Image (cartoon, rainbow, N blue to C red; front, side, top):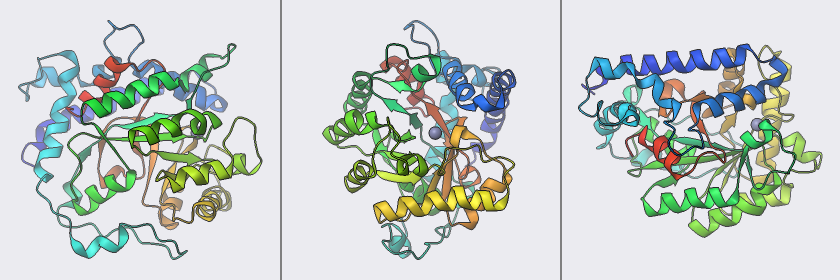
Length: 355
Ligand SMILES: [Zn+2]
């Protein structure tokens, strides 16, 4: 924990430059096109497909090269984020799980809300560096796919390549629950954890991603806009398919009913979209849903307050980043994955946490 102060300027810089970039990109985009903006942002942040390109996510970390707190700062351009990972991960390695919290580990089949796990000693200072990967379509885009669709798409071949890389390099997919138990209770995580999140519930996820996840013994978190599934919308999974994925160990969590922007909404509307989708997911999986994904990553204070009121334990955003704490548990940052993220680019993502 003594090594935390030197990393603050780096994190501030990461947040500043990341916010600046996102603000610029969003600024030229109409609000109704937020998904497209998020996609463009992610594409700008993501490593380009050209193998020789240096991923631009390393740019925010460049100020750390001049502050020079790290021996690895000058190693490679992509190593500059490493200090954050090592500084935050190592001090908490020795925490042991408390047996008194065991009951919260297994999802409750009842409707009784499970309270947020009472943070244990040191939780307020605990951080975890875990790349939370964001997928949408995992399949083959149509021939006339536009930039938006392509930006949301990872081919099954690329997805398998990534899973195979994880397997060969001891990178371990964990769940958002594992992350929360780490942050709140100090439970240990694998040495190189990642979290696979798949948004929106497209039918290609069931067709291509589900078999591959099973083959590699991994699970993912699915964020489902329940009204779209209820309507039987073409191109999306059905409830039986989603239920099958849940039974296989994948977490299914709500993503509103109608995939709407939650900012500047009235209380009743937030209740309808958030509680409505939570209850629908729970009715189909038989498990309590405790995590949420903001459509297009759009949130405000009222949306966060509603999640807390409804006993959600956390939420993911589309902010770019890899460092998590109880402070940002309702706006967890993620890293966008698309076809552009080949193995070399995935290595860059993992290197942000020093993996
Ligand atoms: Zn979405």
